[in-house]
Length: 341
Image (cartoon, rainbow, N blue to C red; front, top):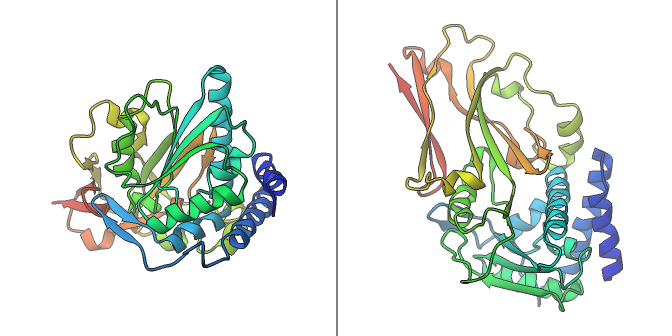
């Protein structure tokens, strides 16, 4: 498949505005990647190279590549990043836009195809991944996609500790290294490190990750189980109708760590009451929603990374009156439920 065909695919994603268009266009992109990386002499897409980091687990190349098939997620991220780059080009017409893509995986799905829509003199990108085989894969894809004359640097590095080159300004930071409820993967640890290296005009994608809490019946909540469930997850699966919302726990955005919240690798919630009557809502659940950029959003259960997460069953704590939560990402990110007598 040549560059004009790839450009046509990514244009179809950028212009998509319905679920059926999301699925068709992202399926075409996924097919392109599978064909482009089929030669084992140049691509090592394997499941045996996951890395446990202090701050979260980096996916294997196989699982990172499979994220492309999360159709709605891939579509809205690409649409949002396109809008972010376009906005920066409009606001800074005399400037080359510098992009840092942290945790790019073997496909660099959220950026490489989009570059076919931008002039090579208008953008520059540094792509990071901790996995050597991902770095090799991205370098080979740059050649296959006809992007060899773009200013692209692919680095094997840990984004949790990476420091940008002195004098190189980050205009756009891209990082999607998420699992549902921000568990397991290093999204927050990477954001804490890299957001402090941004400037006031810099854009971070996603712009905001909103984590909320509610009483619910977890088994009756929408839950995207496989790529084939995308249609159902987007259009037919509704939130549990008797869900009792408890509000926002916290939001991860560019300002959070730049305002001094980075001294601890733990975020503590407020205290919440445990209900006396919990027959209709026996579980305590965490919900994730993302603002990608400028109103482009990813809602609960529209993606694997926004599936609901059950943190506790209320009957197990019937003798307690309240609880609080601690989100700890010092090692592998996890939630701690703390009952209060």
